[in-house]
Length: 149
Image (tube, rainbow, N blue to C red):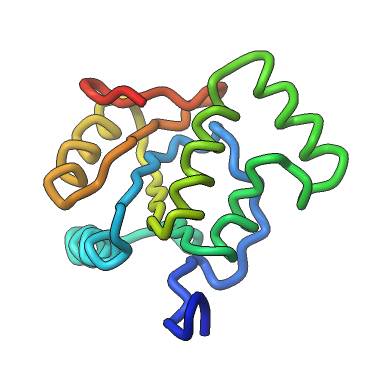
């Protein structure tokens, strides 16, 4: 059980990753978790995900997993977040989605191969109520084409 007696929406069940811009993932925010779950179901029917796919963040547990300040990952995590603050917009984006989680939104992160695929997927997820898209490249979170945050 998760937030307010509902089923825990966070995926994968065991999450030990450090959320950073590496890994080629498209992040999307859904103001209401139900459309986010429907978007996820739509993507699942269209293809398969890897073992660690997709990442879904929701509620207090989602915020803990996101670890926007790096405290859950010890000194290494805090140093990484401080570097992100100085060198990129990553920390700004992470704080933005951390606040979205605090406000009851659902955040979805799906592996993509390149910026073109990220742009295409962002367009599809926008049609399914997603917004605040960012593509995590090797070094930075960047808004997808036509989407600013």
